[in-house]
Amino acid sequence: MMLSAESMAPLMFAGMILFLLVGFPVAFSLAALGLSFGILGVELGFFVPDFLANLPLRVFGIVSNDLLLAIPFFTFMGCILERCGLAEDLLESMGQAFGALPGGLAYSVIVVGAILGAITGTVAASVIAMGMIALPAMMRYGYDMRIATGVIAASGTITQLIPPSLVLVVLADQLGRSVGDMYAGAIGPSIVQTLLFIGFIAIVAIFRPNLVPALPPEARTLRGWALWSRVLWGVVPSLGLIFLVLGTIFMGLATPTESGAMGAVGAMILAALRGRLTRKLVWEGMESTMRITAMVIFILIGSSVFSLVFQGFDGGLWIEHLLSDLPGGRTGFLVVVMLFVFVLAFFLDFFEIAFIVVPLLAPVAQKLGVDLVWFGVLLCVNLQTSYMHPPFGYALFYLRGIAPREVKSKDIYLGAIPWVGLQLLMVALVIIFPDQITAFLDKEQVIDVDKVKIELEAPEVMPDSSDTPEQPVGPSESDNDLQKQLERASKATK
Picture 1 (spheres, rainbow, N blue to C red):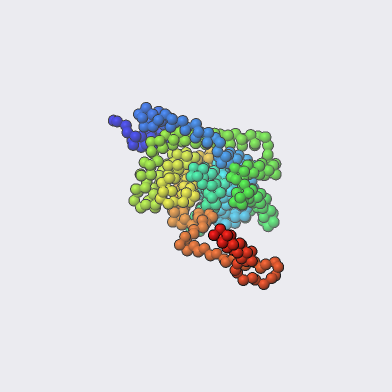
Picture 2: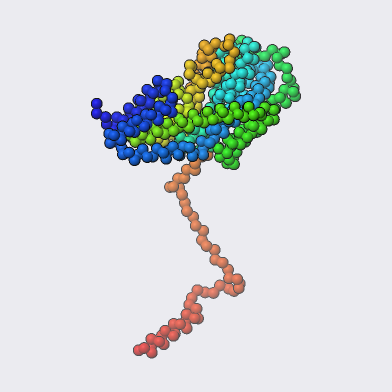
C-alpha cells in the first residue's frame, strides 16, 4: 500500500494507542514513535530534514520553563506534610468533633482530605496519611468496609481539583493559560465536589446508619476547650500555609513557582514545630520529588517529540476535522471528549493524558468558542477518575499498600464505584452550570462600539492677569502702521 501524507497522522495516532495498550513506558513509546515516523516522513519526502531541527529547541524550551519548577516544589511540600504529623492532628481532632454524628468519621475524612488537598497538592500524600490513621479507626468502630475504603480514596482524589493541584499547573502550561486563572476557576468545582461527597455520606447516614455508626461516648475523650484547642492546633497552621501558597498567588504577590517555594519552606517549618524535621524526612522528600519530577520531564520530552512530527503531518488539522464535525456542535464535542478522557484514564495517569491528549484537543476547543480555562478545569474534574478507576486507579493502589491484611481488594474496588459516579456527576454539573468556574474569574470588559460617545468640553478663556477689560477684536496699531508703509512703497515703485 502506498503511504500518503494524509494517512501518516492517523497511523501515528493508532500506533500510540497500540503502544499504550501494550503497556510499554509512555515516554519512550512517544519518543520512539515520533522519531520513527519523522525519519520515515523525511525518506518519503513529506517534509524536509530541517523540520526535525526544531526538536532540540523544543527540548530546551521544556527544561528552561520556569512554570514547571512549581512541580518539584509542590511535590516536596506534599512529601514533607505527609510525614510531619499534620494529617494525624487534623484527623484525630476532626474525628472527635464529628464523632457524635452517624458518619462522623467519614465527614472528618472528607474535610481533612479537602484541607490536605489545599496544602499538599498530591494525591498520594492524602490517601496514605488518611488510610493509615482513619481506616483502622473506622474498622474498629464498625464502619462498612466499602464505605470506609471508598471515602478515603475519594477524599484523597479531591487533591487533584483543589488548588494548588499539580494537575492544574500542568494543564495551565499545556493550554497556554495562567496558573492563577486555573486556580481561581477550580475554587467553585472543588467546593461543590466536597459538598457532593458530604451529601452522599449524609444520605447513607440517614437511610443506613448502621453502615456509618457514630463513635461511642467512651471514644470521644476530648470535650470543650481541650477539643477546640486540638482542632485549632491542626487547622490554624493549615490555613496559614494555604494563604502562603494560594493567597500570595491570588493577591498577585508571587508567581506559582515562588509560592511553591514558599510552601516548601512552610511545610518544613510546620514539621519543625511538631518536632518531625529530621535529616531522614528531608532526604525521603527529596528522593520522592526527584523521582516524580524526572518522570514528568521524560513524559513531556517524549510527548514533545511525538507532537512535533504529528503536527508536521498536519495531525492537528486531522483531529480538528474529526472533532469539529461531530453532531451537537460544542456540546457534542464536550461529551465525546469527556467520554474519551474517561476511557483513557483506565490506562493512563493524568500526566500522560495532559501531555498527550490536551495539546490535540485545545485548538479544537478554542475554535468552537470554548473558554480554555473552563475547559482545563472541566478536564481536571474528569481526570480525578484516573485515580479511582478499578482496577488501575493509583489511589486504590496506595490504599491497598497501607491497608491491613483483613481488608480485601474486592472491597476496595467495589467501594470506589459510587465515588466514581459522583465524580462523573460533577463533570455533568460543570457542563450544565459553567458559572461555578467563570464566577471566580476576572470578567473581561465588553465594549459596545455602537454606543460609544466622545464628548469634548469647550476650552475655558483664561482671564488676563492685568485685570484690564477685554479689548475688542480687530487690527492692532502695529498692523495699521505696517499697512501704511506697504502702501507708500507701492506708490514709490510706480
